Length: 82
Image 1 (cartoon, rainbow, N blue to C red):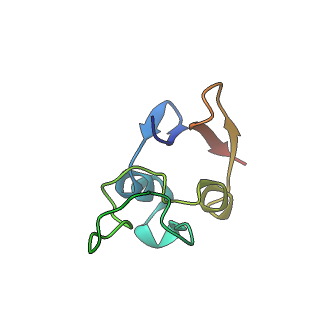
Image 2 (cartoon, helix red, strand yellow):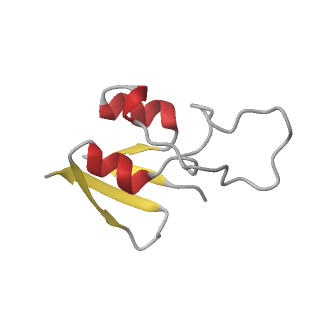
């Protein structure tokens, strides 16, 4: 299972839909390196329609003014306004 952000009962599980919550793609903070191994040469891993694994969720949520707690499943990030 991949990471997901749950905010006000809505689950966000791609960079594209998380960007909608945050107010734009420029609010996403990508990991410094590709978290997917192995990965096909020539294929972009910073893809808005992939899972949230390449997003630094802690930094992204904090910079957006959201607080978060991790769920029983550590891949679930429950976000709320500060």
